[in-house]
Amino acid sequence: MKAKSIKGKSTEDIKSALDQSMADGFTPTLAICFISKSQDRNSISDILGASGISIFGCTTNGEFIDEETEKGSAAILLLNINKNHFQIYFDEYPEKNYREITKAIARKAKEKFSTPAFFIAGSNMETDAEELLFGFEDIAGKGVNVYGGMAGDDFTFSDQFVFTNGRESSRGLVCIALDEDKVMIKGVATCGWRAVGTIRTVTKSTGNHVYTVDDIPVLDITTKYGGLENVSPDNEGLLLEIAANFPLQLQREKGDPVMRPGLVIDWNDHSFYCSGSVPQGSKIRFSLPPDFDVMEKVIKGLGDLKETKMPEADALVVFSCAGRILSLGPLMTQEILGIKNVWNVPMLGMFSNAELARATGGNLEMHNLTTCCVALKEK
Image 1: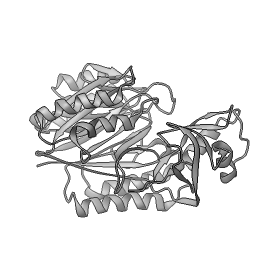
Image 2: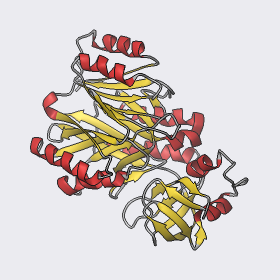
Image 3: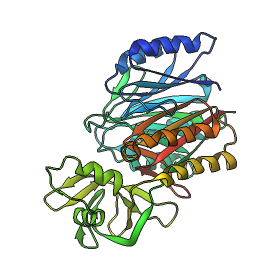
Image 4: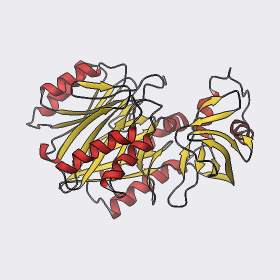
């Protein structure tokens, strides 16, 4: 499989880059598209579709094909993968029947491929992304490979979109099912945020709504721990500071901890709505704001993947949490360059609202403040 990465700040830029990429006879069959909401994704899709290219796409909080990150652009990974080795699926979940939707997709994929793997993107911040993952597991088994992320919206926290040829949804899923007998897909999800302090207990929660930790309102204990000031609804930067720098680390009996930042504050009782489920009785620790160790852990994790499971790759796709660029700022380019240098193959990346992958040594889960790197190679 040959791959090429292109990007642009307009529809015309993408058309020109596509034409240039195909000038040497390269004939892509699949395009993975990470596109800002400010771009005309429908026109870009029409251009790709006119060349017979199948589309997997979602909106972003930023995008990149090398270490230079962009905002308000379109970034696309073009692959000339055999059409018999993949299938695009698209569905919506207005009834919030997430698990049933992915079970149905997995059934179809199992009919086509004996061992399918899945590359997915979902939209809508209310989506229970772990239910999406569980649906694939129900049909394809606990060991199924599923990687992906949740669409962004240029940090507006409004509507996010997934799309494919002729279809899009702000409450839906786009999926590439891959034939693992023909295409190797391996990934790693690495956070790097260091835990600090004692292990604490979630004493009251429902789903992703955390009320108290050690019988103290979660907002109060977080702000006390972080030494935060001006803790009021009038502080517009408070939520981003809490989410990016002081997330909860949900401890697991098996595998690495999973990040659960507070995304919405209920000021009536100082509770959090977190990015994913935080069961009552579960154990958490707080986090230190990130430093260079965060980037080093990501790059080392990817190097270990290359050494142990994926010595060669044709292309690399990266879902990096939007919170990472908020926390790391200009240092983010160093992390991306380090990722690129592991295989030095065409790369595509986006800043996502959540990352979907198997925790290191653990289960399929939704992550935050995490970098999920996915390597692909056609056999």
